[in-house]
Length: 419
Length: 129
Image (cartoon, rainbow over all chains, first blue to last red; front, side, top):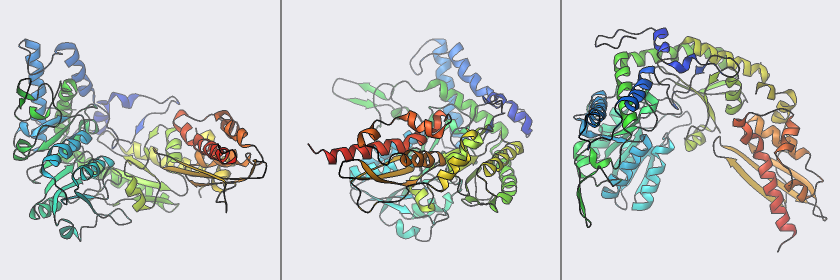
């Protein structure tokens, strides 16, 4: 694809050619139909090359070497941070903290901000849609501080019920909520939730793990206090993610992990801490993966986040159309079932076929989907299902992938004798 | 893996044998597969000699876990608790009669684990020390 400043929309064929794994075949000789990008995305060749180039050409530790390759590594590492800041429209790169992933970013806020600011009786408000990563850290924080955990409810279709939001926000210090549901693909009305939370005096952390790969995110336009994301779901490597935080909040927070790189000066008795963002980055960072994440962001920006969204909307519309006949045969689709409110996710069950059996049968055709509770066990209870089968799309998927999914579902219907 | 879903497997999945609960079980065990949320409960009733006189299982899960449990438990009645404890993965695979992919072995073995736990609980009750 054209990655220049005036990039044109790449054709699907050109995009697929950028992802070497899509040329692989399964042990049964089937082409790979990868429909599990909500779990992790595939990586374009340029990202794989960026990793390789760092290790081959300028592997060195950052922020301390005086020699040339150390300076080059430091520049590339900090440039990647600046790319993330620009991608999210943060005010400055210092508001971007490297973490291992979304989960670590949320834990950073829970331990550092939560430990310093939450008191017994304060309310933490989350939703019933949350991934365990945006639930368990707050359960533990509530246990440590005596704070109270409260939930924005969802109905039996998985729709967030915002009618009582203002009452739920009473006494609330922090709202932690996902931007897009990992299980259902629902895009939440974050701007409205943030405005109402701020009006009630609460700060807001948004879990962007499922949103940042698929939607243009502007942390300043949304007035977010914290935003967390993982590189591996957006064409980047595993093991690297970020926490965005407003400078004033980050400045006032105590360090999270401590050790080297995050200090200004250390005596045997005490230490003073580095400035932002390094105050929160103890020890040698994941340099290679941060740099390669910067390359993934270049790729996404060249493709255009608006184009990501329109591509996924078109695929989703096509998938709904192709799946409609199966709905008459017992296929149940959970979530909004609406391209305007859905990211590229289809969560489903087919008649009495368990999601794991469905995934196993699809696997025999090279179709990779996720089956299970998707780390949202309480939500499964709300939907009254034990598990769902989830297909999720990204820029490298096309109509052939949807056709392969439908063919796999037809095969499952035949095996399970569903008429 | 698609070879797995043979008619007798689907029959055990849709019409599991010995499914439900006993009025007064002598031993009970439960487990769940945390990855997929499958749940299973096994209840055992013992006769005066300490052998298994009746057995039920309940829960929800995939065809592999439910059919494997149904077939395993169908053969468990009349056996001694020691015999049940000595059951192994080979017994499950023998019932199923076909290879199970490594990713689904946990499903197939869920019932085995719970049955053995219930048998151990029964043994502890039969021989309190």
